[in-house]
Amino acid sequence: MTRSDLVDLLAERFGQLTRHDADAAVKTLLDAMSDALVRGHRIEIRGFGSFAISRRPPRLGRNPRTGESVPIPERRVPHFKPGKALREAVEKITPGAHAPLPAPEMAPGHPPRNKTRA
View 1 (cartoon, rainbow, N blue to C red):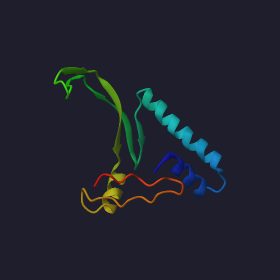
View 2: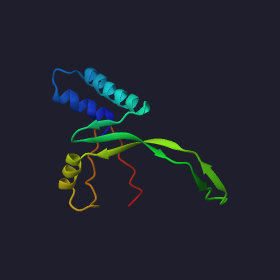
View 3: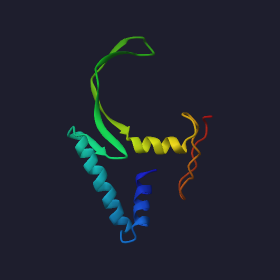
């Protein structure tokens, strides 16, 4: 699902919202979440999950071409942890732990995906 899919869904579900209003609502929500994460805050949405910033400590990597050691600096990355309700809903739909998901239907105007991988 893409951002424009969310906008379309909001506009469809709430008839009083125009597509422009739905776009503004989605943008405002995503901006607020991004700003909170940038400030180091944790976002918790009950039943859905939580977003937080995780720290990846500095480490020593290796250049695969030359074998030379390369220092990799510390990084802070966003991390999502699904809530219990979301995990259970996904597990209920998905038979088995690693069952393949059905291919999503393409929206009109989107080119087909490149299927070079098996």
